[in-house]
Length: 165
Image 1 (spheres, rainbow, N blue to C red):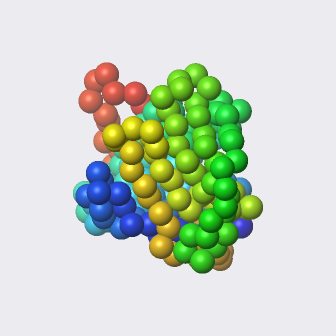
Image 2: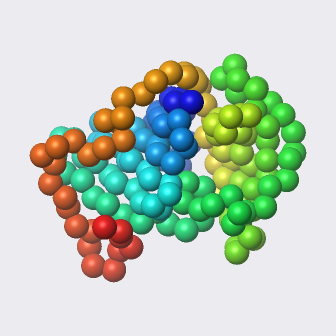
Image 3: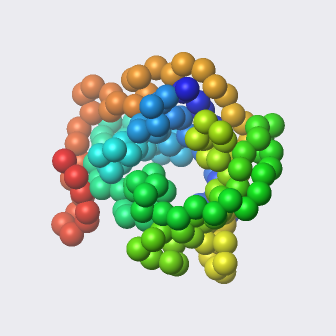
């Protein structure tokens, strides 16, 4: 099902509220990060498009390996660690570890239908942070939310930056 999840951003990201919208298939997501713009994540293509509405521009880049939206679940091990309720919705806590890099860990709380409501990144590290949902709304979303608006100009990334066309 389509769903929109609102979060209070972690202090490391300025504590700014953000909203994640997920298309029912799970391969497309939109991350609204405030007035500066939003990102459209295509999980299957491992691509993120950053859209800057005020500038009427966008950039396309490859999602870095290790980000939860960029890899198949087969690349990670999952260990169930408990249950909780976040924003009034039940979810299961899982310890997730990248098989290729043991230092990439998180504890994520995922609903039975696959929506992540809470993430504690790097739980064993001094760099640990938590993002937790404040509101969850299920309902049909306009497919246009997951496309770059017409007339926007593509901006290229600086040389040496990973990207995908």
